[in-house]
Length: 308
Image (cartoon, rainbow, N blue to C red; front, side, top):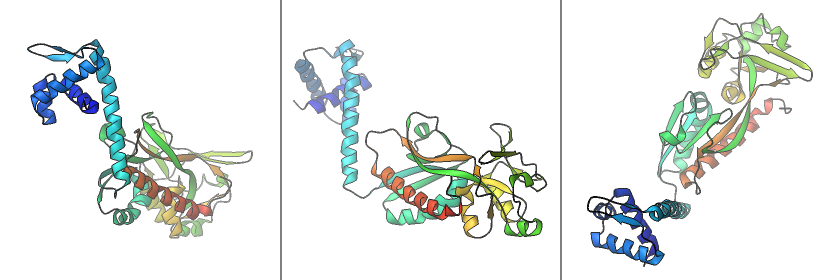
């Protein structure tokens, strides 16, 4: 008796409620399923199913055995898939979720390189303002900013982002760069309005025992990091933004960092994916690709103080 096949047949009978529907689902003969389950019961020495003319369902022992069979079959299928993927080129459909600002600033520009490296892999990128439900929405892998709340996810911290005050060079040339965070109030500081808390996010600076907080009260507010960076590049005011988001503008000379020797608010960046015993090859290669991107980003951000 092929015990694994018998277990699959038994599980199909429980899930469909009859031998005939199980046989149809498995595309085998009805007699094959019936005989297989009968031999399984004989091997185990217990009755697994209650059979009536209208319905077939598990006995008390059958319910226990069914639950364990599902686990065993799922683990075997997952292992076989992982082994098959490990010896072949990643292929299929990869669904990735990334915060919109982070995606536009750094991930999307690198995706053509990823696509060229894995031509058999179709990638769909979801650029969202905040983390969604990965498990519920079928997302394979995601980048998330801030602390995680979903315990069903496997998470790896890949970067520690910190906020940086910055402004366009032309604005600083007109007014002179502030020397200390206490010099900020007279200047046009543009704020990020967070709808989920209903207020403007506060700026914070620390150096030793020196601690300064500032609530930006400039003439422009946005709930979009991209919008804040766009207007700051045009000289509209000073912004307080994560280094990972302003790095392209800083590298291009469009924004100049301020107070880089001060500690500021931080937000970790996590690579997350639903929990699985064997991580699919498509997720592994994307994770490796993103790891390389963020290692490169850390090198580019050496203009920040090494104290943080």
